[in-house]
Image 1 (cartoon, helix red, strand yellow):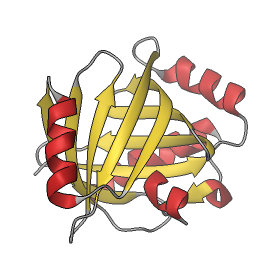
Image 2: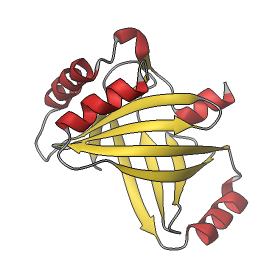
Image 3: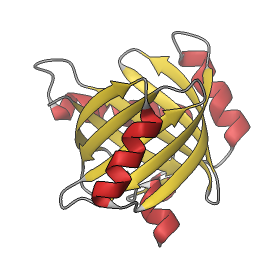
Image 4: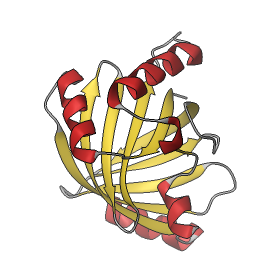
Length: 169
């Protein structure tokens, strides 16, 4: 199962932090509108992400709810028919919650920098350091820590919860 090292933080200065991210990014930013439908499951989280172009991704992931860099194991399945898949999952499992956001994505090496505007919650930064085969979690955490410093992410900005948990909380 693929793994990455993640952090989630409240944005302290969206414009300034996005500008810093653009300076270190390998490619220009891309913006997406996403709707994530979460389903109740006994372990981890399961969501169907729908994109504006009609495509989608079913994502199952498991990570601890702690502040700071944490390891996340995930499985991702792409679909060209998220509407039908969502209907089947909703009938089988029920729907836990829906998270709507506009995401600005930048890439810096193997790290995905997400600047999220989440409906009903506000603005956030997520870092996902995608670990290469054989790369240790400690190496990924060091990359995350260095990027946090470069982007001005302070310890008090860090969050432990997923957006879905914050909406429900």
